[in-house]
Length: 544
Image 1: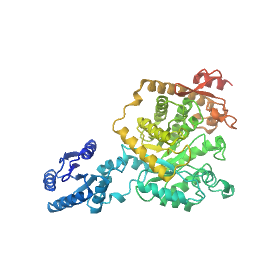
Image 2: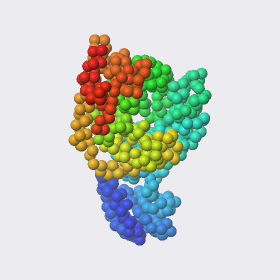
Image 3: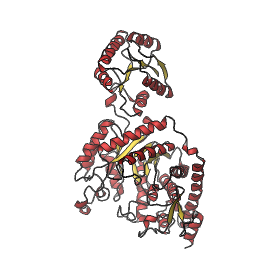
Image 4: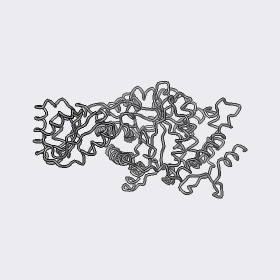
């Protein structure tokens, strides 16, 4: 594609034009600059000679002068027979408003739009109906459409007696176009007892999220998102009646992807009625259900261990276990989630090393029939309560996450240490994330090449392999594949191979492991604070 761009009339401000042309050139387009203060006749002469596919016009002076300049420009374009070309406009918000009124520009940029908007326009995402065009409505198509910018996702569900505040908020968020994915934050009864009204407790209605209770509620929530940039919608899986719940989500909100676990959302963590072993089998069946329908599956398994102060090696090992189970279940597109600052005591260096080790383990299974898409997020428990510090934390966390080149960034609102994000706080948090992401994509230093990061990542992989071998040995002779056998995986927890300090007095787990943050890494230690290797730790557990 050929792109011709410059500043119109008496406007000499060309910095924005240069950025626009540089981006077009990076995308492989042929570009030409008209220069500053280009009069309409000169535009016409260059357009006739160059025959561009897109003409980018910039004007950054007063709106009154801009209106006259644009009217003169358009009259010349029409007289020259060039009005059938595609025109973009860039300028200050007041002049951009004038440009929109004229109705001649396929896309108008005033600096308030996300950085990815110009890129999408140059990739063919904008046309004469740019402001009402609908972006791709499947997660994989949307990832490819928006690249190299990752999709932005945020939880949203207002704790209230009704769904009305959430409906209104979804409409507001969608209208701004800041998110690609809205994740419904459901209250506990919606997630656990949706199909069992007799078990629902009126006193906890809305506790923890939006209290949807019917198919009609979900349909209304989805309908609220059908505006703006038409974000995808998704929700976490149910913790009971998993397949029935999955079918309902797919039918009503066109669930963008499934999120499930192996060891959690059951009686072990109090989030569901099933036993540990039974829920492992149910999660596997849920993966297979979505795999058979070519719906992507997200594994939220590893960070649940980190949130409970498990050593880093356990989070790394279960990254392998979940990928193994998703692969065996027939999942074709696997979204791996890397929650940073989980636990919050991790240093940036050791946090990144842990994520790289998880990537090494999970992506052993990657191939044409098992595509892996990286999703990153800020640690849910890591935010300071102080608002100014929380905003800073959001920014630094996302900048670190960008080292993984994620396909999806799960934005966690800066206010989460105090309360669930309102629509305005979601919009603000996502806008901050957009700026950080654009900065990183302009040329972030390669933090993954830090020698100490690589050393720690490789050590974690070696230790995780020891733990995986120990789990495999539990099912030796009794299971064809111990690493996907629910009974063996449950025994990995009951024997203490998979354990976390916060699981003390748990009916399924031991909660006996001791951990400590040393040099920014979370490691297993003995009663005297000495670091314990996985060979030593697992050996003692298997003997007993």
